[in-house]
Image (tube, rainbow, N blue to C red; front, side):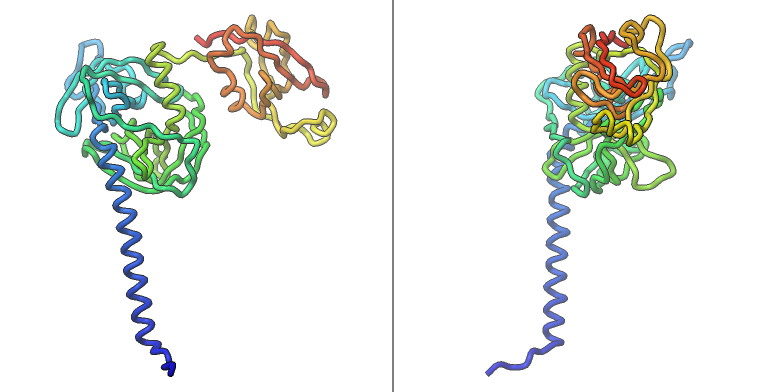
Length: 334
């Protein structure tokens, strides 16, 4: 015989079961964060700098930020703005050990810098792959906001592929947006996934907004760090134009069989520049370079990398509603 269902008992069971499930999920989330922090935390450092004026190094005339060891032999990654124009740099580890650090190189355009401390067999982070990130996945920030060492905050990846202007006005590309809380002093610290891999370098917040913070993607950081270690700087190409994004009318796109909806309108060409020597003119619309499409200033900047310096780069422009083909030889940006 089948007895009628006791609805009150069923409700009690369901609510209890749901409570256990929620607790289990929270425990899993907590354990993921704890494990990531345990993995990365020992490699996170506090960075203290002193600046010098014409009287010499001034007590209290300093700043602080965060960073992390990314090789066992003492290379540390941080933000350029943390150490820019510093006369002395100290790196402090979680165990309290202090080391004087040498500046290997910095790149203000990506707000990244590499330091070196004279120590061996250090705990180093594992660099992840930022191209595999997805909005919504766990993001963990570790740093030293306001001097509170090894502070952990957690949130999610809010968005990918953002652009962000540096203090000098340059545009940084491929920026990660996160709602993991960042504050002054977090700059240069790692943004970490649930696997304990560094996926970004925390770099900026928007004040007074809440829950909007940014990190340089680790794939960018890996490339820039390699350049700084081998060259001491990052080499970039330039062609010598002033341009602006401009939409391409549908009629013209159809006529020229274009797959892009915008290009770069050349509003000025610098005298004696590679662009001038190649015959680029005011009013031209750049739509392609080196076999890649150009649908805006950002795309053009991404193409002007070191390997373009001194190389003949086939370029496509729209001139008087027709495609015109030029060869530009970019020079190194000074």
